[in-house]
Amino acid sequence: MILPEVRDPRMVTVRRGGTLTDEDHRLLARWAADCAEHVLALFEAVRPQDVRPREAIEAVRAWSRGERRMMETRAAGGHAMGAARDLRGAPRFAAYAAGQAAVVAHVAEHDLGAAAYAVKAAVAAAAADGAEQARQAENRWQRDRLPDAVRDLVLADQQRRNSICWNVF
Image (cartoon, rainbow, N blue to C red):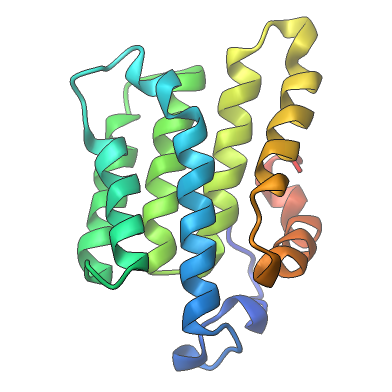
């Protein structure tokens, strides 16, 4: 569960009664795609022939450029998460990160799902004594790529939802 019971209007698009602009929504989607792609190799190492997570990342990037419809992109996210169904650990979390990135097109708040699953993937791939270092390194990598226009929004949202995102932030 990565979505809060009470929605923050700053993370809800203007069309749905919130204050999130379309441009900022697209920035969140691109950032989520970057987070997911950063750990995608962990999935592809065990399922090199399964392109569903990569296609989900490509779909949300295309959506952010106005080249794909939201429903197509959301469906691609579901397929990416389906690729994770029988896996465990880092490969599973990496596929979930891709799926969550794609569904940002539908609900902007899934951006933290992509980021959180990417952190979980990095931690799961690390040696037990390096898990905390992996968590911190992945968080730094993600924060270094946050677009300035949404940086404060994402950092505040991470603080607000950290407990429902497995305390990875």
